[in-house]
Amino acid sequence: MPAEQLHEPWRSFLHDIDTQLSGPTEIHCLGGFVVAESYGLSRPTSDVDIIQVRGASDIADVQRIAGKGSPLAKKHRVYIDIVTVAEVPERYEERLVDVYEGEFRNLRARVFEKHDLALAKLGRNQDYDREDVRRLAQGPGLDVAILEQRYRDELRWQLGNPEREDLTLALWIEIIKEDRKSTRL
Image 1 (cartoon, helix red, strand yellow):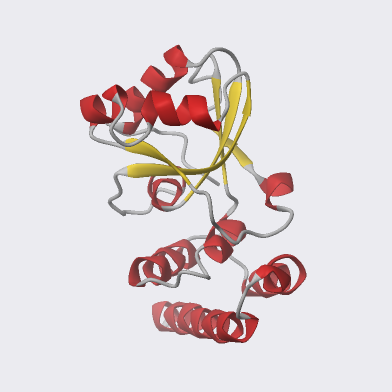
Image 2: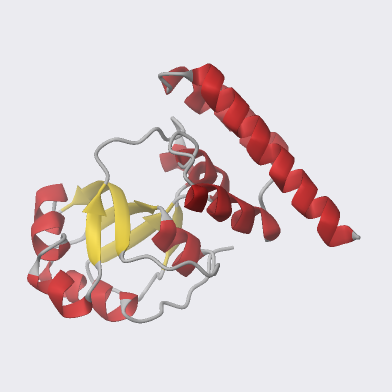
């Protein structure tokens, strides 16, 4: 279950965005911000990765209001990063989780569910991506069988080199299982 407590500078930053939106606007968030703020896992980040914006304001509006180099980004030293290229599970929108409900007037923040968040990191497979998946797996709710099924059904067909990602997923599952086994000892 995602955390409902927003920490600074995120709380002030998102409130400032909220006041500048022209009306109800939904953002779909993924990345380190979601790992840290929504799932409560320690991880530094300076941006909110957004893959989709819907409603009264569009991606260009949100980028202008809070993107890198904007007055809000300079004020809060964090920014919105619009993700233009990402492989994400095909039906991720059906599983988005509403967070911070009642916190904002115009802004509706929706974050990737844990399995979808992990799979969105698969193609890059950077050190911090593997560490994020490891952290997500330490808490409740990350099921290896669901991860594998969503990969096969909703993501694999989108990938440029699926055989490489098959190996990456197998490695991640091995890491998750080893971590879980060592914490039980």
